Image 1 (cartoon, rainbow, N blue to C red):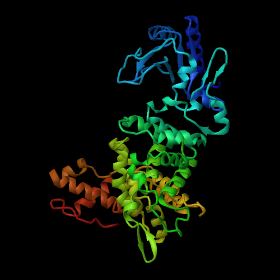
Image 2: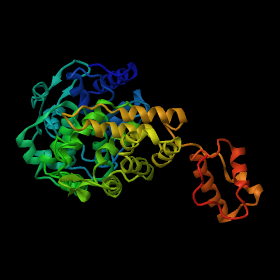
Image 3: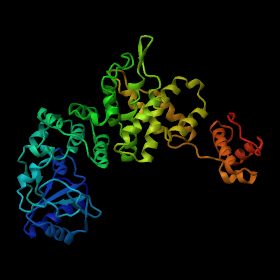
Image 4: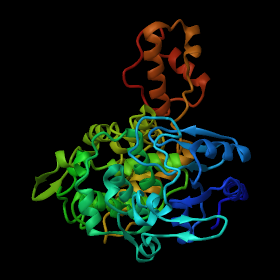
Length: 462
């Protein structure tokens, strides 16, 4: 077992030794074991303690590390400053209880505890002291064969496991077992907490390698009804000249695969861009029409904003996230459109695009994935490189232009109240148009236009 850092390895070893001294047994369970068998480094550790009461487990762990009980349902003991969680085997189903002892079963057999786990590739345990692998459900064999099979009849205790299957398929290139798909079809997402749903989508977008396969799992499990905006993409035809890959659903899967190949490794940046790629064509089902013998989707970029909001508010309703994702959906066609007309595109157009989307570098990532999601057409996207170069030269690649004229600059001119807001808006438009490039020049621009009156409706370009 390889750990990400000696501190994590030391924490696991010390807890396992302390538990053994008290007569119990601490086993590493879940993802860390699975990842180790795949040759991956364990970034965190989940330890399950057998043979000790919950009170004894808390006392034992706190002798070697500072830890807190966190979570609802089946609370865990989490080490402070270390990615290590300690649990005890339990019986029954999760509740809203925060009591670490809730449902605890100190006498549980290891095989029985593993039988409660979701998928066989996660139903393995490893003894840090002896190096023994406990694998009663042949999870290691499933990993070698890249199979995803549910562990047993208790799989349905937590419907979130369907979404977990989605992200596991994407992360590890797994083929779902037909029986597992059949069980997933019997489960309902009703009642799942938004934060739990969000966690599985984050793992899909931030860690998945074959995201299209993850979406296919969701479709095969008949769970698209929980996400009607995605369901509407299935069967939404596209013009075969521009989209030889198939319908919008197929296209979205290819786009996500292209996004996964170019992730930055920055979780928040990849989360925002990944969601925008997932949502970028949600407006097509309502706008696709046949015109002049060809399928077209005029206005799907703008219509997609509303569909993006309805989709995301179910599990990721944070206003800052919506404000970051929605403009990327609304303007995902802009890089290609500007590039086609690049001989006539001035700096003002680039600055205004930066104001609308916030970050042009994010927009280019979305547009690049969109362009690459049309196999067998080539993924080359010169529009992206061109736009990034223009934006970088203007200093607006990662942020819109800072306002050069602020309220404090106009108050000495006697501009205040509601007129102040209107003048500030006019100043910013004029700045974007290139009318001035400093605060002093901006104030002079106002002075030359009767500051005692109303600002011009359409500031002229310099």
